[in-house]
Each structure stands twice: as C-alpha cells, then as structure tokens.
Length: 419
Image (cartoon, rainbow, N blue to C red):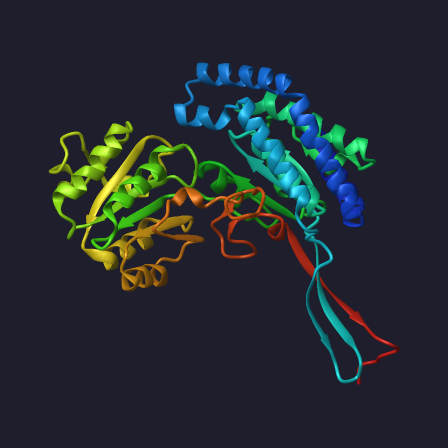
C-alpha cells in the first residue's frame, strides 16, 4: 500500500472513530470546545495574520485576481468576526435529539423521528480560510466528524486554524480527530477519499465550477453541491429606482468575489432610458466593467458588447452582464435558462410582478426589493454556513446546523408483536 492510499485510509478511519464519540457527546462539552476555540482565535491573532500574510504574498505572485485575494485576506476585524461566529454557533440550541415527529398507535406502540448527526463529512473548499473554522464549528456542534481539504492558496492559514481547533478539542477531552485537515495536495488523495464509502457519509464541495464537476464525476459517496452563483437582479418598471440603484451597486460592488454577488442585471425595457443610464453610471463609478446588449450599449459609451457566454458567467469580479427584457415574463425566462438556482432578486412595487417572479423562478433564495448579498448563513440567522446548496435534496440554500443532521426512527413498545 502506497503512502497516499495509507494516508487516505487513516483519515477515514480517524473520522469514523471520532464520529462515534461525538454522537454521544453532551451539548455542554461541544459548546465548551467552541468557546475555547473562539478565545484561542483572538489570543492567536498575530500568528494567524502572519501566516495569512505569507499566503497572500505567494498568491499575489501567482497572479490571483483582486477579488480572490479579498476572499483570502484576513484582518483583525475578520478574525474577530470568525471568533464571534464560533461563539454564536455555541449559543444555538442543540440540533441533536430533537423530536421531529411522533405518533402513538391504538395498540400503544410509540413511534418518533429524532434528529441525529450525519456522521463523517468530507468538506472540500477553496480560497476562503474562514471556512476551515466555520465548517469545523458547525460540524462539531451538529455532532459530525469532518475532514477538511482547503485550497493551496490558504495552506498556511488553514494549518494554523486546524491546529488551534484541535487544541481546543483536546483541552475539553474531545477526540482531536473530530476535525482533520488534509495536509497533502496530491489530487489522487482526494479521489481516494471520494470513494471511501466505508468511512465517509457525505462530501460537500465548495469552490469553482471545475472543482464541483470533478467531485460529482468521481464521488461514490453522496454529494451536496455548492455550485456557482450566477445571481440575477430584475429591475421592473414599478421599482423604486432610487432604491434599485443602491441595491444593484451593493449586490455587485460591495464584495464581488463571493457567490451571492450579482452577475447579471436585467432591466425592464419600459423604464425610461435616462433612469437606466443613472443606474449604469453608478455602477461605472464603482469601477464595474459592463457588458451589455445593443439597447444597453446605446445608453453608455463604456459598455462592451455581451456575447452569449456572458449570460452564464460567474465573474467573481467587478464585471457585470446587463440585458434589457420585456417585463417580468422575459426576465423569468432568462433566469430559468441561465441561472444556477443560487439567488435571484426582483425589484418591484407591484405585488403582481413580485408574485409572478416568485412563482416562476426556482432558486434556493429569492429576494424581493433586497440585495442578493443577503443570501448567507449568518444573515439568515444560522450563525455560519458550510456552503450554499444549489441542490434540492437533502439541503437547499445556506447550510447551517440543521442541514448537517439527519434523523432516525425510534419505535417503543411493551412486548408488541406484529400480527
């Protein structure tokens, strides 16, 4: 057996062993480890920043885009935000042992459905080192062991985070193997983990389109996809156009390198050209490169011609595709053709238009007169997320604690036999 095969087997066996302890671990112990981790993140801030600076420097040399560098960057404020997120996860109610349904039969047999951990989770992600902590914290709170495989661009930062996490676990008497970080970059190792049906119950890939496709093609264990976010905003003729301008700029320019940023803007052709131009001007003032159809190009000299591929593009950058549509019906048609089921928004005062949009677009999150940037676990009150599922089974949208549990049936009798 070669080193990679042996390492993959050990990771899986460790996770399975740790998951058995976690399944029976009281909430108080899980929460104590999370609180210890939050304190450790603040106390180790300088070390975290130093290692992150090395990752940043190397990534700049490799030519990562500004948006991707922003995803990688940690600051004192962001570290505090990560620690606060861990504390908020600790404060949530226990997602385990909840009675989701119960029935008492006429013969006295009692049947209940109770929440339990999934077991062992393989979490593959890119760029954002905070995901190491968020993913580990959510898995611990929900009683799951996790194998974390981050991107090479954040290798040093992820290593510090994993070490602090395992130290927090050890300090509270919890198996350190509950949170493991893959420290080898060999792609063959990931392929082996994806086929480890004996030890791993679920894989959650979170990253670029190529990563997701590769995982789906190779995995023999269940997959919940955090697929690309080609997010749309449709501005209807009944919209509050001043509010629409603020929302559109926020959705594109506040943080363009994240999956809930707007990538395509659809504008009702019945809106006056001058009002449309004001929206375009505001985007350009925020350094957004526009790519549009003929109608949009005629309104602004800086707009580049859009090609068919632009309507399917997740730019993750200060770039935006803009298209004129003939009302909400054409907007819905465009989104259903080019969207990815992540997040889409309608800006309209008309209840009829809102209703048509909500009925016609089948995405995990739908916004009405609000920015797509709200599609986030922390904004939804989940504390954090392991990703935003664009699947429809077993979880959809931001995945928090409840999405990391399943259930089992418990049947209680008193000498009952089936007739």
